[in-house]
Image (cartoon, rainbow, N blue to C red; front, side, top):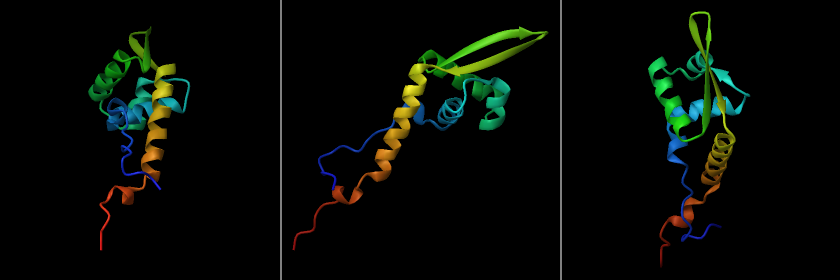
Length: 111
């Protein structure tokens, strides 16, 4: 049984945001993904995906590589080692939350 003095595990808010969580989850299942694939699989708009990728890159969770193919820019996104560690830690925290015994947090009735 969980001690009532234990704190409830808290997920990393940067990762927990739905759009970023979707991106990181997809990237954790592959070596890299291109922008169009991420857009399609996450259902995010181009603008939202671009903003979220910029945010994730700024904190070192993803690397973004752009190259010019003909007249179009091809964008590839890769999860960094830190990104892999963070998404793994996130899912571990979520597993802890699922198994947490909320009943131990309730005040005990005294008769």
